[in-house]
Length: 312
Image 1 (spheres, one colour):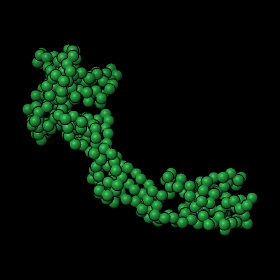
Image 2 (spheres, rainbow, N blue to C red; image 1 turned 180 degrees about the vertical axis):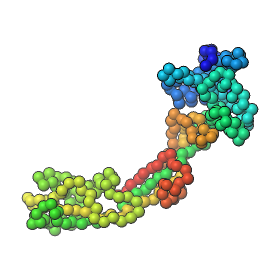
Image 3 (tube, rainbow, N blue to C red; image 1 turned 90 degrees about the horizontal axis):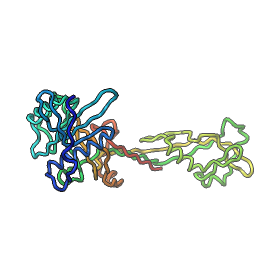
């Protein structure tokens, strides 16, 4: 595993009086601490190599005890204008081997050449690009692939019939209350008020008891219990079903991020981050500007976020 690391040389330094590349290291170290709060993360550490017998400088050292096994992860940070080449990967691979680290990762501000990525894969080294949307030195643009599903009820009608579970002679609906069908109040057999028909339909829609998508559905049952209509002092049992016509619009786009910092996996493409904040999401913009698609299954890129909107 190697000798114990010496104390960090950065403990008393402030980011106001240090070079840009040191700030890059410190920022990467802070991000790693956010990503691994249960591990010991140190910046600017020296470890004596097992083969070289000399101190090897490590930008970020991550240590964690997993049961009886100590894990050692070393990370090197490179703030350079050009993408890192195979030489940078090869040199770091020798450090990983020399200090007997379990894992190594290279963090770059400018990416990696294809050859460097290939060599990193072969050596089992992770290659990351640092992302910080609010840092002027390493500012970049990032967005989340997202989808939005808009479900809408285009129309509905109701069917009233005798409830076969009750004697037919008890079926009677006063014509007066049929003047405002949606607001008819329904009751239980004992006279307890349930709710209006429209509220019960909306409840069934909200709880996804009614089908969504593009289509028409007939004679759907949406009530959870037997219902009665009040006729004077008596209550008449009735069975109510619904015909409903619905539409669905699916769109795909990107949601810009306002703040986020983390490591982008150059090989896999994902970003490791502790948290992020999106820009304001405008429903009008989503509806008008995002790409209309037939289904979520046809998307080549899986959305990170799927927004749902239902309108009754």
